[in-house]
Image 1 (cartoon, rainbow, N blue to C red):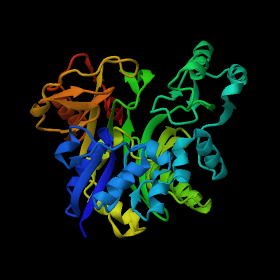
Image 2: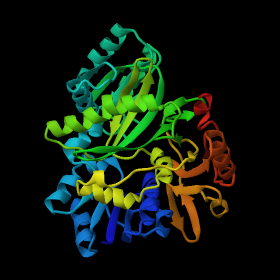
Image 3: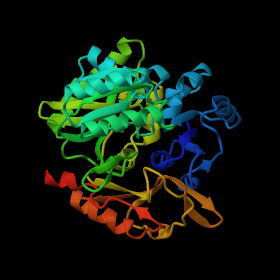
Length: 425
């Protein structure tokens, strides 16, 4: 059978998913809603509001769609998989109850506690009780401390203040910021874990799972992991810190009990499970779960996959994950994100991008771009992803930056140290 596929989303992750799905011999036609200028060459971009489930369903019916793939977290947390299941339509992505592993930090922490999954110690406060939260932080007296908005905040709801004064400033911002106060109606305060961060991804059909890669992301805006948190400024895969021994522990202590725990609680987890980890002296611990591929980790994981991604997704939706093999190539992938100057705070859009046609030795994924006439303009904070390859990490880094330097737009910004931490292994 050949499939008409609808892919929901518009960022770099969705361009990478479109790139992978478009290579499948099982694909009949790919639609991307709303997509971006990069996805336009891989299928047909369609102007759908992915938050309007009835509009999505009308398009599915009108275009004989056999499968819907959900890229971003918001529609999953809003229950699009549940909605489409009531229509007997196959969808790739967890249902609302399972997506709450990302949708609520408090839900995730309580779930990990119930199933003895290693994570940081924590306490939860209501927004009405932020005075109590302030007292708790002062009483603990340990810095840095981790403050997390309970709900979705577009990758910008985690703060790591290093002093009491900074912590009090964050509490005030969470109470008053228009973009954050809804996500921070409840606040999770965690102990700060010391170690090396990494991400391990699993794909599950609700019954079984397979590991589908690992990566190391670079969240901070500044060189040397300094400055504000972002959605991610670059990544590389595989991450040397995820040794065979660590991966074995991640599977036994984190992934397996997560999948079996969700099933035991009546909320089987089907889709991509992102385990954001801190590799501590005691072993791997969960920093956070995501209910979808990370961005930009997706951009370095999918190019390493030798498997037919559409075949893997279909097997997942049919509870036949055990029938497919997931193998990786031997090369290292490195992704560098080009961002708008000022990101993750205020930035300007509409800057003309040059050099796009000069990228010959890397994969270029669009993230925040738009077409105007015959030009491509910036249209977001994170604008482009350049993914290079190499036989080892240093070669992958060198090859990636050689291509990055060909691109330009006014006030373009990127970190020049993506992958550097991995070189010490």
